[in-house]
Image (cartoon, rainbow, N blue to C red):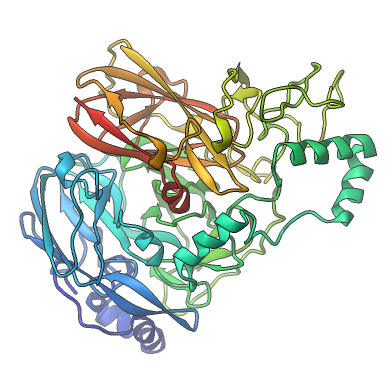
Amino acid sequence: MRDDHRPAPESRRRFLQLAAGTGFALACGSLLPAYAREPEDRDGTPGRRRPGDPIDLFVRRIDLDVDGRTGRAIAVNGQVPGPLIRLHEREDVTIRVHNELDESTSIHGHGLILPFEMDGVPGVAFPGIAPGETFTYRFPVRQSGTYWYHSHSGLQEQLGHFGPLVIEPSGPEPFAYDRDHVIIVSDWTFEDPYRVLARLKKMGSYYNFQKRTVGDFFRDAARDGLGNTARERLACKRMRMDPTDIADITGATYTYLINGLGPEDNWTGLFRPGERIRLRIINAATQSYFNFRIPGLPMTVVQADGQNVEPVVVAEMQLPVAETWDVIVEPEDRAYTLFAESMDRSGFARGTLAPRAGMTAPVPPLRTRPVRTMVDMGMEMDGMAMAAPDRAGSAMPGMAMTGDRPLPGMGAGHGPVVGRHGPDDHGPGNASVPTLLRNRLGEPGIGLADVGHRVLVYTDLRRLDADFDARPVDREIELHLTGNMERYIWGFDGRKFSETDHPIRFRHGERLRLVMINDTMMEHPIHLHGMWMELENGHGDRIPRKHTVSVKPAERLSVLISVDAPGRWALHCHLLYHMDAGMFRVVKVS
């Protein structure tokens, strides 16, 4: 199937079962989704779209089979995920999106630098694509790398309305490989997404079945002391924090997928022994961070969010929602498991890399679920007396800490304190305020501090291109990421998007520093449309460009922005339910 052709309505799962049993997939790989076929080499299969050829995308509902169950999905060209779109740097592209739904839809090219009218955000960049209508996207391609696309209409993304997008560079790349595989990790629920959201609004912990028990209390007391354990539990209660609430939505309803296939269906990518394989890893989940590893196979990270970085060899990496990571692997003549463990350890996505069809490798067991700590609450200060704040910022009685005996969850390995929270508690839209703000860019992510192997961290990233904008910063904007889990309200500076009456204003041509402070006890992947964010991770003129940055609990993180894109742009948390519940703003550049 060519990427720009409308596919026949066949069942992908039935075909894959047939292909696995007969070896037919290798002969007729063109019938599979582009990222699931087996290319002959890095140049791909015959029939790849030529630069300048228009692309037609048809958005419709289909029945989707996932691990033996069937649900209703929103598909692009009859596929979930949608077809691989391959573009070429410096081409002028035309994409025609045909809406065959009974509701409005849209497509946003995530991470693409283009005119704001082509950005695909209803109510910001354009009205949306009405039922039965066609919208034509036309824009020049000004970049290369691995990206993706998805709906920006309601909760359609949760229903499968997304797909991969690869832009071939106009010149040679700074690393070599023999073939590439696109690896899209996502989460799927058979529930109506709006029912999921309604349940969260009634009870924020509705899907959390990993809460601490009385037995956990006594085990923690035996380890940390009864007084410390009791004080830690009291602090969590006063901060309206469930320390086991790592993810709003869990494996209780989610099935985790690789390239649209569940763990039982086991997507498989083939290779020839001796080849260098490029894996284009995309976290297209709506709500799920993943801990990704390939047991027995090191990964060399070569791109972050489509941008070249100095190579870094790691054994594992945390995949925040909406980020893309390109890695090079050199497998031996055996099978390997691609293992994407949900951050809360409530489930996993699984695939296989193998030299021959039908091969499998052992699937690791799920590791013990992590818990939030006092550091995530912004309460810890090594070796000094401190007090935990309540929502109004006053000290909690009985929570003083002195000497060198911290409360549970206050061990080493976390980033340095870089400031204290100001007096503003941001009102009822914010349930807690961290006293201490940290630089957490060197932390691997919750649950990964003691895994015994190297995990990628943001401070590992150094850009390769010598194109840093060395102008001094003209202005600084500070935004607080806020929320109230009990009421399932999310926003910036304590306000939902529906409560804001004006956009955030960027000045065209300025060099801007955007400071983000996470007041909540959850990670938030923040995405800015239309412009690059340069993550201030301590590497001077080699700081990396990113389209999405993950801000950890009680973290102060800053990015630099060269404001070069006039128009109206979205700035939002890429956890879909957080965005829908209010963590969204419009940025106006003029």
